[in-house]
Image 1 (cartoon, rainbow, N blue to C red):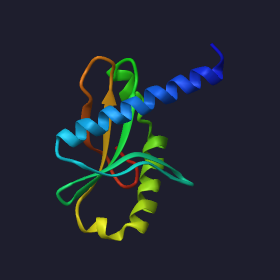
Image 2: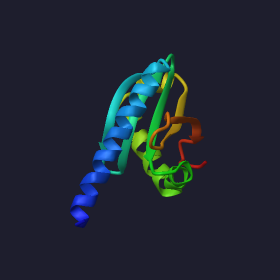
Image 3: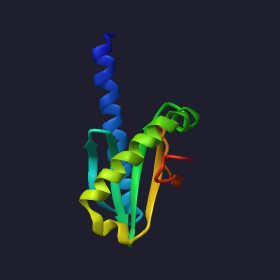
Image 4: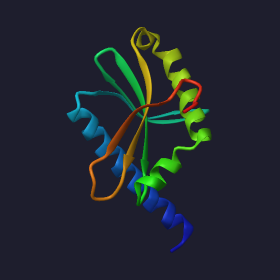
Length: 125
């Protein structure tokens, strides 16, 4: 398979995992604020809110849970944290509540696993 085709398939799997994660969070009472929020410093897969808590969510889809956990690298967490700082600069009212950085692990044929508060605003686990 050509690398371009492999990349497109990975992109489709990632989008499906994000959609599944979003529905899973909606069932838990979260409301979507932004999806695939892109900035010059990085992208946030989902930004959701429940009550006064705003969560910046990184979705990791891999064949196994261990691989998905490993995919949430320190560099990736820092990118999400920097992108979140830019989102907060444009949405200052969100800082009135609690802020959280979550990861959703998506593994085929299983419900997503929501890991709340995995890292802080500096990207540190």
